[in-house]
Length: 178
Figure (cartoon, rainbow, N blue to C red):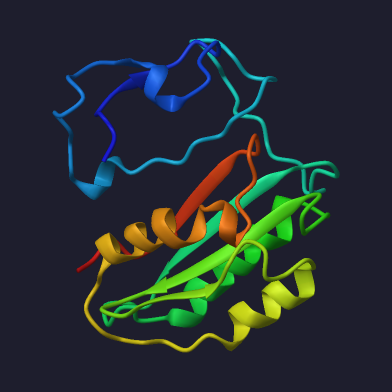
């Protein structure tokens, strides 16, 4: 959980480098404060009137190691919607997949945590989307800690395709319930 108020001026290389209103360990845990982040060089300042709309065309030269953590617990009423969100992200993250572009891993979690595939398993979008489509809903308790452990111990590692010097991004797709 991130600090309650964060202000960046655009010179930071990490979100953690931004100014924080509260001490790092003081957070607001209520989900009404959940946010999304848009990173762009077209929009820097404190008084913006519009937020840029991302281009519908995926970037051509994006290099990224992307992990999707998909909640498959019993509190998920519509698991198809969770898979649709994952597919939406894959459709828009880039046009080149594999070692020279975007590499994707999916972790499905409930009580049981499953690395569906590692970063270096698929090199084309169709195979990634087909695998996500075929996933089943596990419907057990939520084990986010287990998913995060697998993310850093089994997915974001050189042995499973993580590349040095390439941004690593994890996206959590969940309903926020236990």
